[in-house]
Amino acid sequence: MSRPVPPPLPDGPLPVVLAGARGHGRTHLVNIHRLEQAGLVRLVGICELTPLSAEELAGFGAPEQSDDFAGLLKRTGARVAVVCTPIHTHTELALVAADHGVHTLLEKPTTPSYGEFERLLAGLAERGTACQVGFQSLGSDAVDAIGRLVADGAIGSVRGIGAAGAWARDDAYYRRVPWAGRRSLNGRDVADGVLTNPLAHAVATALRLDGSERAEDIAGIELEQFRANDIEADDTSCLRVRTARGTRITVAVTLCAERAGEPYVVVHGSRGRITFWYKQDRVLVERADGAPSGTDPAGTVHGRTDLLENLVAHLRDGTELLVPAPRTGAFMRIVEAIRTGPPPTPLPAGAWHTVPGEKAPRRVVRGIDALVAASADTLSTFSELGAGWAAPPTEVHPR
Image 1 (cartoon, one colour):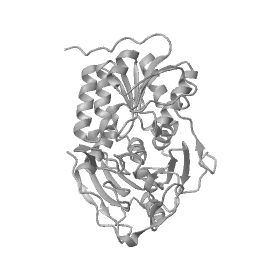
Image 2 (cartoon, one colour; image 1 turned 45 degrees about the vertical axis):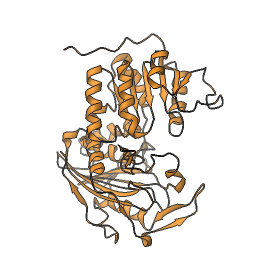
Image 3 (cartoon, rainbow, N blue to C red; image 1 turned 180 degrees about the horizontal axis):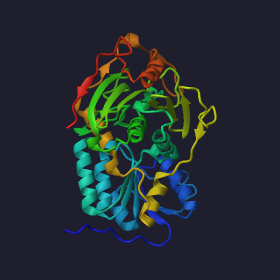
Image 4 (cartoon, helix red, strand yellow; image 1 turned 135 degrees about the horizontal axis):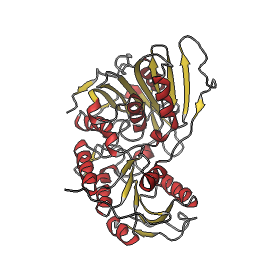
């Protein structure tokens, strides 16, 4: 059976529908406006339960608004959909778009379970549409630059990769939407934990730097998951992955930081290390012998390719997608391990305290900033670092 071919693209800017325009979706709205100014896209529709106000749509024309995603795609003739909706709706909306021959930029995590991920990939292949997943850090030119440095032996042989993320989220963060901090909602998987959503970029970036992005690249998974907040999912966790090529990757993250900082990934080598602050596109090379690294002492800042812009280029001239859905398979193995593993362990009351926040109080895990950094530095888990509240990791065998 021949593969279906989506309808041809129109001349001029590609018509785009945005599903989910508030919250994080606002960043997509701003970016679509930028690309409209560049003549690449045209916002023709917004799918929201409550229509956006004229003030929220300042700078745009009059895109159609509806809570009927399928109808909106059909009526507007959209060729691209940006899907920034609750995690448990990702699969369905991406496949609805594909049914209409519409290509998607799908927010991360790709889906809330590996079964849903397989269903998504099968549906996309059957319909012949493209799907880019919104791991923005993977659009950074720094990723390829680090790959070249490693290949050229700048830090010797790779010993492992560590990642650290210390963010601060208050009580209001978990009250903003019904699915926040949930493992499931009304019988549907959600998987909104620190590793799978807010600091998922740390996981995905570490996997990309190792060249281990597909499902078959994961050989073993160890998890230490905890929560200080009164939620279902994890807010303070450590993950260790063994890849098929033998690399040890450790990711330590929290939403209960003492002081919020920039997340980063460290590639440890036998003769030095490379640190990548992925939100800043900043790379620092440190050689063990003290030899000049050829970079500024504060690091080198690289450029970045926008993922929607890359999707448009892919559709127009065949430019390779930076984050096609199949290349998130390794990340989805980790999501599945978290989904099917034990729920996170509540931290004892003495391990955290409450401090005032800008909008609401927030819980802070004592000593977590140093612990997260030590994990990335030593490739050790919380329990191995001696955290009194941390039990040995649960080992998960990926299927």
